Image (tube, rainbow, N blue to C red; front, side, top):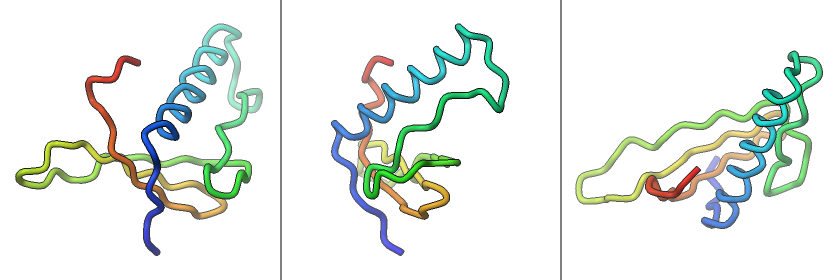
Length: 88
């Protein structure tokens, strides 16, 4: 299965949603069953139960960092260049 390319704006939106979710969990001192939902899948808008992410292994002469994201249970797989200097 090939990966779906994410635009930088989509990655930024996903990052903002995950940071907001984390702040809510910390501020309200929530426990696992009460966590807010993960952001929906950018491809099908399905509810995401699990999101796995990793950086693609670097390639010689390529200076972009590439983020790989797998959504479950819908199974969509994404790929997008990330700016490592972007503020969190």
